[in-house]
Image (cartoon, rainbow, N blue to C red; front, side, top):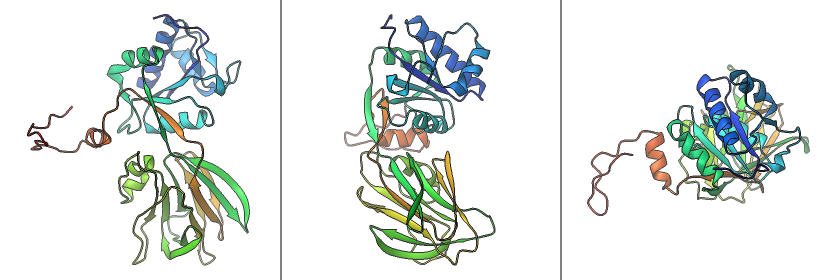
Length: 309
């Protein structure tokens, strides 16, 4: 398939892993064969060219801007998809993940379907869904000292292993509870299957507009996970009696040190992340496949036995 040469597809890979690097070379070669010049991040270009010096590549920021990108093909696990979301933040290009990691919950296809995946990208044969993101602010003495965003979660955690955080939780401008803890996770529905899930939070369907708050190892009678509306504001304050300091961690990629008295405010961001989908399969099937859940014995409403994909 030959396509218009002025189309720009960004390829983001975990080049530190041989399998991902080889997949990036394969994708770039397929795009070149179709008449495109692949676009890669400046941090990836040397690794890809070292693996195959015959490739002709565009480097993002050198003649091609993020606003020129039509779609991002991501080769790796969920961490690589989070990196790609950071690179493409603010543009309308959807992300299409090819799982080369472990669970790969955000990925849409697997390694063995790579050639078909690229062919469907070239044919624009995919659907796009939007995922909620978080706007995260840190205030100290009412002054905003740091602002960022998150696709999965923003976590407030203790900076020292031996020191507990003393926090007060606030919902919509009203205090709810104060307690000592290892931290607090504030997540989107997308992030409900990540850190928040490991901390005991509920799985929330991506189609549900909601925010989650999950305390980490809290010393309190009332410290259960909470699910609130999408227009609510969540806040965590580090009380002055906290003996140590805290750290804000957003998607495991953006951090900020929190002094005593710091206040972290999380709201829904007006800028979503767009994911490319190759099928409209139900989310429950993704849960079963990614978590390898047992469904043996199920016959369903029509009496058919379940067949695992």
